[in-house]
Length: 116
Ligand code: SF4
Ligand code: SF4
Image (cartoon, rainbow, N blue to C red; front, top):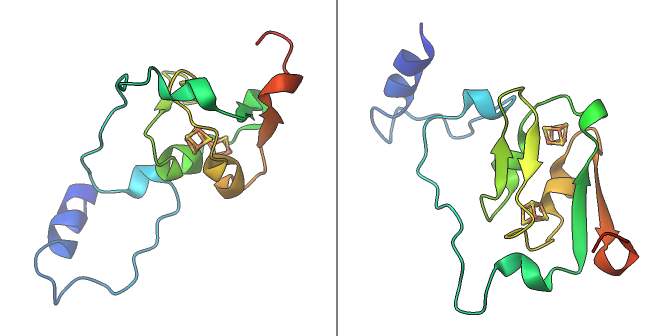
């Protein structure tokens, strides 16, 4: 069964849906609407971040968990399969670092980063 057929079946009716749906990675997710960040009244929302998430790209397994869990939708998939964080809008909540299965995202205090 193709992926789209599988999702059509799962979404057919509430009764037929499994109680728990498990996803191995972001590729298994059905299409979902997400809101992309825009500048708010108080400026870019990354302005007041205390901790900055840094992805170790070399050791990233491209699973997409960070992308899936980021509540702000500020993690973008690049053409090479890696994920990049838009720091203009990242609030530094640390959820991506907490959910990364390989502990590949480090939260660094902004004041400890020399390039600002
Ligand atoms: S720190 Fe929070 S807002 Fe920033 S990329 Fe990670 S999950 Fe998204
Ligand atoms: S969750 Fe971690 S390993 Fe997975 S894509 Fe994001 S940074 Fe890479």
